[in-house]
Length: 288
Ligand code: GUN
Image (cartoon, rainbow, N blue to C red; front, side, top):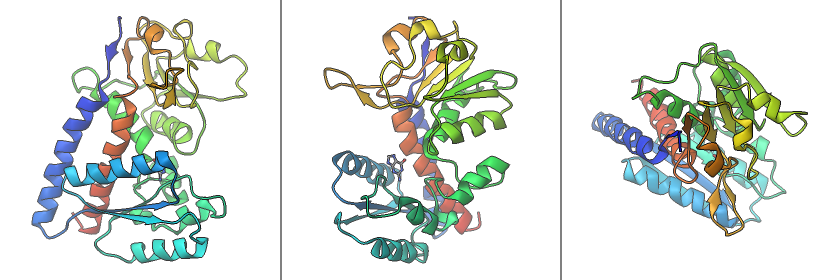
């Protein structure tokens, strides 16, 4: 192995300690940061995710409420709940877990969340803020990837200026916001996707590669320039049922300069950035 491991668990612990300290300071001034997590239906993966998010809040001294509803809940009833949470001064962040049942228009629900409480960063106001460099909330997964890049070189950060970054995947949640964040740091950014004709030709040019497709072995050792930074956003299962990413870790770790593992890489960072966004929302609401 030549690559240095980017340890998402260790970085998360460090950032969550800072969150807990800032949360305690805000609490001392009379505001306890509060997150509402809304789960509709009984998707097993979603149940695990929301439990982890609520537990992470509690561990960092944030107030959290978990609202669980039957899969049959109407769209109108969900919109009414979102409205009530928008008006609840004890709640600073609102997260509606996706996917929602088919009969509910997820985009309509996201747009109903007040942008001031959009800690997922999925509202079009948040997307617009990111695109234009205005204050807003950044989606947690790409934000966590940026924090990982900032942690390199003993915390001095990886200088993206003039570097070539290749993002594989173009989702609204990861690929597109990731590309904008890298661009804001003066990287030259290429977005690759399922219709890209020669992915390897692109990734071989890259100083930084972010793989966010949701498919195993999208990136193999022959596709990586020696010394490149490789960030793996994938969450897949291998043939033995073990969690794995989009990157062939065993091969790529011998070529890359830095690499994130799965598990223990981007996953914990996503939840950490949700805590950071919720704290930030509460600090803004309190005028600090
Ligand atoms: N489903 C899977 N990931 C996420 C996430 O980050 N936020 C929400 N709201 N739903 C998700």
